[in-house]
Length: 99
Image 1: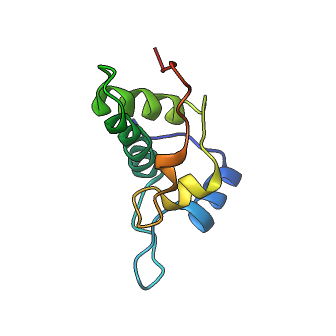
Image 2: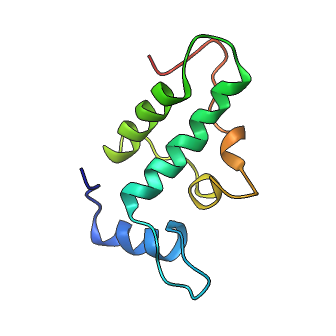
């Protein structure tokens, strides 16, 4: 299901967050961006052996983001999935989870 963003949010996403090729053309949709970010946030679960899977956490983050219930900070939206990898330092409540 495509993400429904306001015109303003879509403009900001295009200018700041969506992946671009070397010529500056946008090569990522908002839905793909949310999937990319959700995946890299969920990878933090590899650091813990608490029974939660990356796939389960990825889907939970993806659902929250596409429903606009949760959006990570700008560095995470811009850099998740790159060599910078800020997403691995974001969101891990001690003893807490998404369930």
